[in-house]
Image 1 (tube, rainbow, N blue to C red):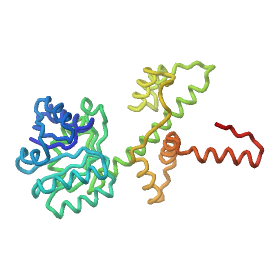
Image 2: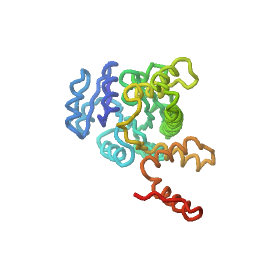
Image 3: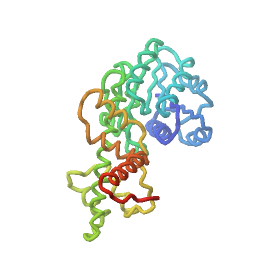
Image 4: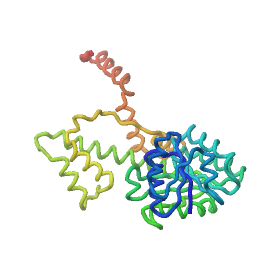
Length: 302
């Protein structure tokens, strides 16, 4: 078994390591030479000098995972690989691509005789040790070609990975997964903010989070991580109240609008992230001015 990996960031590099430790020969490349040099230290992983070198070093019907940011970087990687691969090779997009882009890519690549798998990947920096949850879209043959590697990447050979359906369905499932993640994180954040607000109770938040991890209805991996974070820095004094969003939450909200399916929790969680980024500043200032106009309320000046 052998596979190519393009993109050696935190996810790509650890996927290369997990595959190599599972007995797969891995040929990997990243535009940053330091990333290639680092991954080459892993037994079973060979660093390529470029995409052409990667393609040459793989024999037979090749399977290549692309682990680069969604959008233009992913499209560029595919475009640069196309002249180097052959009919019946399989490209696996493991980034968080928009599912409609994946549907279009699958059609375009099929016309070139290339198989395509859109792979939603969850597991983050813990995937190397715990395995990755894989949501896969593509034709049965494309999935068949990738399945031996999915069984190694996943937490278990038959658990933690699924052929969701036709092309686009893997990235669609991952998009909704991330929308749910936004809502769960927001609920935990708001709940602990309310707990912290009652100073008179002097609740040990880290110990409470640890308590909830055992037998509670809200126990989850996100609660596990919350417990760890509070144990490290309970009052979070050194943390800026700014939460980034990487795009999937926006796509989920837009999908809800397109379908006419109510998704208020996920959508409001996204809006809260926008607010944390300072994007609610103008409206807040205008609200203060309106209160001053209709009620004579004082306006706080900077």
